[in-house]
Amino acid sequence: MRRMPSAVSIAAITVLLAGCGGGTKLLTGNPESGVQASAPQAAQKLGFPSVATKNTTRVGGGDAIADAAAVALAVYPSAAAGTHPTAVTLAPSDDWQAAIAAAALMAPPIRAPILLSGSSSLPSATSDALSELAPTGSGAAAGAQVIRIGNVPSPSGLRATTIQGSDPFALAAAIDRFASAARGKASANVMIASADDPAYAMPAAGWAAESGEPVLFVTGSSVPQVTRQALLSHQHPHIYVLGPPSVVPDSILRQLGKYGPVKRVAGADPVSNAVNFAEYRDPACPYGQPCGHIPGSFGWAMRSPGHGYVLVNMHRPLDAAASAPLSGSGDYGPILLVDNPSTLPSVVLNFFLNYGTPAYSQYGPTAAVYNHAWVIGDQNAVTVGVQAQLDSLLEVVPQGK
Image (cartoon, rainbow, N blue to C red):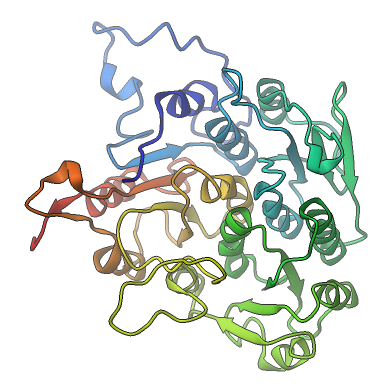
């Protein structure tokens, strides 16, 4: 049975997250001073339904910096012993490729949530969240409390290590080397995404956070040398390319085939691509039998209810990196996309109708499995109407309904 998010997790979002809009400053309210019964619209001020419904929780930041800060605090409430992360990844807010690749550091053994920053100074949301998180130091990262990705500030008073690269391709390869060293071996699987079209790369962040398998990048016309070198270091890995031939041409797959067997996970558009990745498993699921992720397989294999999901606007690629720790902890689940804030795409709707609605037997709903979805961003990213529709789709129902 899936667990619903804890009260501490919801409080971390509702109290510490910037309000809807464009700001990135965390609020510093007192969670013990609750909304009073006499307050106008008391229920709405508590955050229902705009922050949470029975089957969904919203991280309502006006931008990815605020969303990343809130997600990090939801994953690591940092309010009691054992709830602090050992390390935090500080990724560049002007490099979506590096930020998505950095999601792999959320996987064991480091398990570092992602915060975002520009190059000049830490945004207040990031600085405040980092103070709350108070990372303890990761043995797998040589005691570092902060893992800096590229040209981001070095927070004072914390032990930091830096992953450097001259461009997004080199940064992604350097993140892969760092993660392999921390793990003690290179992964058997590698994801390849387009550096030119972020919407097709976004689902990779969630799987990287869950599995630790790296995200490397290609262009529409070449496989950069640093990507080739990274593939060589994995010693004939299984290579999974995200996106259709219009994004990553077949000629690129032939080049990648020199370094290991290549398979494509594709959809005609970014939304379909994310759904197909959520359903995908290699080796393929036996026909007519239950499908699920098994040790040694690649892919979410989400073809049954009882899972977590993360809903992100495809036009906010940094939100994929910001939300990736939710895919790699708690309810564990894939990143799905919307292309319009006010509409749940039909392919996502059909995915939930086919696989996402739990049914309970004669033993009653308390014996059922449950879903939970995280909605990322304010109403400019995903409206409350879409959130309410999602809540209904995830509700447990009697068998045969």
